Length: 424
Image 1 (cartoon, rainbow, N blue to C red):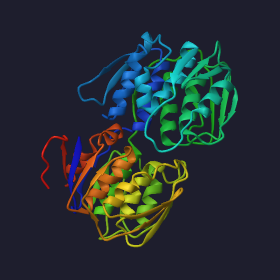
Image 2: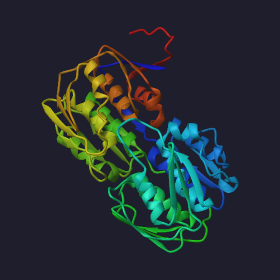
Image 3: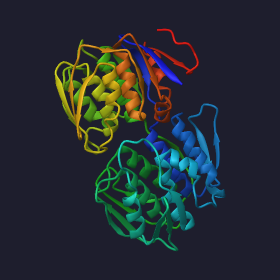
Image 4: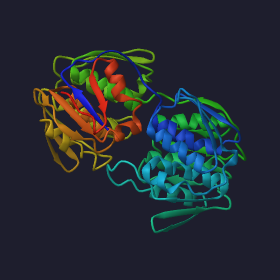
């Protein structure tokens, strides 16, 4: 499957952001802790959600998805398997988030080391360190991890770095532990706050999510709830950057504006106009953006998941940008493909030097990962001529029909199979 994109068209109109990928997947995993049926809404219709559905069903949960695809019910009462399906764990890193709930529920979990986008080392050492602090015994062999605990007990846990995944996994495991658990140097991302809110709706006693210290008072059991997932701040940011770099004007709806403040600040610095509403932003791009430099940081800093899209914008900005990636060292792989489109990007370790050019040129490129694929789509929007992008399955993992939504904003995008004849 490929995307064929005719560039040089400003975006305009209204687009609605879907539910947050990184919140939905973790909340789906957390539903394994529930004592009844959980009904989730505003779930994004993406392939990573389909993969997580497969993981839950493989563990014995009953999952029903409504025809709209964004609402589902999860009944974990039949969960009796301790090992998530290997082929799905290899496919998606977020599948490892079922470890905490299974450990708390069943006392044992065995899983393969997870897969996902190749953007740099992402070991699960901190997850395991947290489980061990709660009293679990860890065994690692031949690419598998086994975690066993007769009874989890609350503990003080200091994370070496504010890992999002480790914070979430430990928080879920600690919900049913005996006593109080304190996670220090916890990640502060909005998706962790959303998971706390979901777990507390089930009857957990958690406070502090959104700060660097989270306290969990263990309870004996949890109930059930209905819950709506927060909007996806990375999808919102992708549309904001797309509009700004094409010189268009668009209203992006279903946005928690507080979650995109770091991006808003940089877009304004680059010369875009951003109007903030209660649950929307309006972005108006200038004739040409000004070059600005960014440094990715944990929330509330500039998000690493927006770095590739911002580099795409800076590749056609006026001036030179310095982009420093502090989270994932392999996240610049997509720049090789941007250079095929005429971008002037030089990577030196964790730093990319981006010299803006007047326009990119259509080319045949391939998405190396999820956010890199989004960056190539954005680059194609400002390219002269036609761009063909292969590897679209990476983009479908985390965006709910990104090409279709861009078409509604005026982009010229066609999704074709490799065997179809493509017309420029």
